View 1 (cartoon, protein in one colour):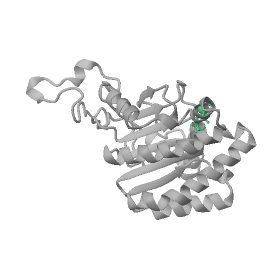
View 2: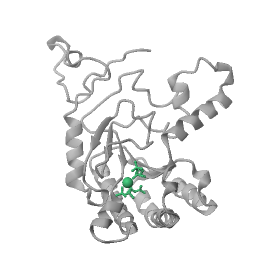
View 3: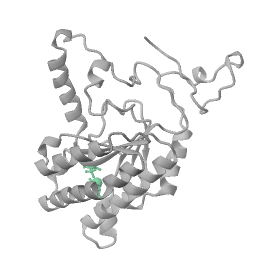
Length: 270
Ligand code: IPE
Ligand code: IPE
Ligand code: MG
């Protein structure tokens, strides 16, 4: 059994502040182009936005922040850009990890790390260890990550670990092998940069996530834009398959209102 239940099996606890925000940080290249700068300048500037959003998540008491930094398809970019992105990743890890640890931020990296330089792989594991005891916020960076890769590697591990249960595996069996089994499913997904697609991000985990798309380019995404996404989230009615009427408790049941606190925390199975 995983630590967190599946949103398709049990209606999860919800609240006004998302527990887990997952972001596709898009638009760095266009930000740079608008300024007649090389694309890489946009990526460098994007790291500053990451710092700001981490700070805001701590302030807003969001427990999990997951950022898509490099997709399994981004290897298709020109080799110079890929090389520069790897260097930026290394530089950010070297420069930021102590600060993350001081602020109580646990760092996790998900994705197929085997394709990275051994030196980078080592740096990743050292960085994760250095923050392993932090528990204010879990910052997960998805690097060489793909949603299909994730599901497949989980299936492969499931085949190895529970072959006798083949044909009878349930969602929990699979979910515990997914790269993000340590976190609840995202409550809020944000994609900056104007595109309205998932681009092979957390395919399994986004089943009941609220989706938010904004034209704001990642380097320009700051407190105002982030809070706009959070207030859009607060206004959503998360039904998880039920009707609106089912979410409004009758007078006898109490005075919970839709959108307040843990509205509609009803177990549907088990
Ligand atoms: C997102 O910005 C960062 C990565 C994918 C590494 P882009 O580089 O995709 O920026 P645009 O989409 O070209 O503007
Ligand atoms: C998605 O951005 C991946 C990351 C932000 C790391 P892309 O800019 O690569 O996405 P597509 O290819 O345009 O969908
Ligand atoms: Mg892009």
